[in-house]
Image (cartoon, rainbow, N blue to C red; front, side):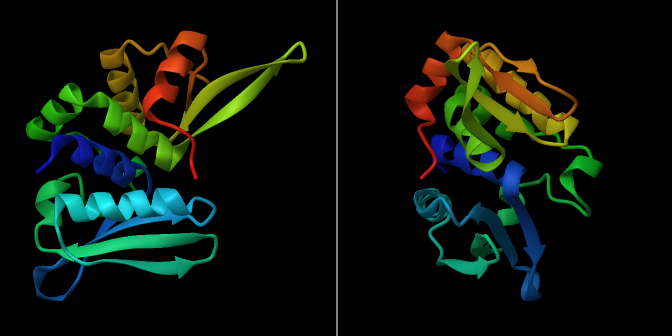
Length: 183
């Protein structure tokens, strides 16, 4: 399994993904992608195929597309799966996942920001300043975001109870190098 692409897919999964049990013990990995970002949907689909070379499909929903792939192996790839919303249960990476994220934090951060983040302009005294926001109601997932930022030397801070911010110019510029705009 290529670790960089897996880190990216793990970030997408923790933000906007879930596993659903289908007949015969097959799991469906589902990632919801905003319809406004077709390139992101394409990258999600390609990454799924790179991790497990199965058929990837799309289902149009209101305002989004569900990118999905079926396999008995998805449950092994995402042991965080469980009943209920992610913010209502403990999210802890398995040791092998944490090793991947610690070694390849950039793709993981990219997946998290592509799912639950954005790059915005913050106006101060009529001067625009770029910044990144990451929003997730899970304390555990926000902590994973912070740990990945720390591994890369990215300055971040909490904005409020559910939002984290990267606002220092050097850190924003560094994230711009590998996150890129949503398309």
